Length: 279
Image (cartoon, one colour):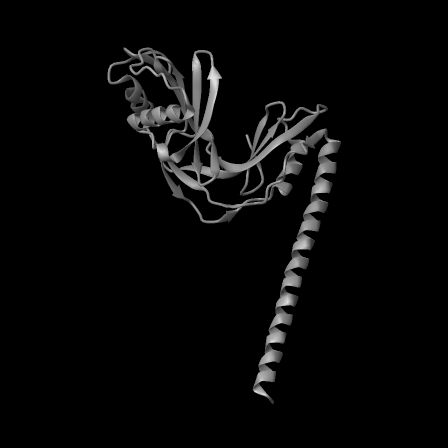
């Protein structure tokens, strides 16, 4: 047989195989898309019967690959946190309430709030860029690893503005790990935060989420959603959740979760490893 003709036949066979391969992939994708649409319609109908509605603005996210993390808290004890803000000379005026020469500190489990009664550096430039720079400088002074936090902008509060920083790994947020700074013309007048972390260690690699479609049916029976009252789901996000921890400050597990928010301000968390609600 002519070699040139054989080569031509071989090329056409490869083209035909590729066409069949892409057609098969397209059919699989169409099937998955149709299956997801059918499941979404069934889910919407189920929730509607229980007066739970998903806003048209909410897109049901795909299930990303994400890892659990073991965390190490930044301060090994409450005493270390207190001394960082108030120095070595302070008094505990009430349980978990501390006073020093320049401020007061309140600790409530994994949360804290510090009031600086003697700020030293006045601020004139209130642009977001300058506020972020000043706050990151304060984070470094305190010992917070600023590169683990993403600047989320500012909100107006009574005496000035509040700059918010959320802890993230790549694009995924740790929902209950944050630090914020209250800033006025006098300088930084307050610092608050939750679950300040000094280190992350991946517990596993590429663990898959339970799909949000498999999680949402539980809303119909979730005791935190009042019955016979309409609830509108306004936000669904994947991320991490630490929760309240025991006295140990090492090897705290942050788990992958789905965060579901309603228009009434209710925030629900579901463990993405097993689809169960987190109290």
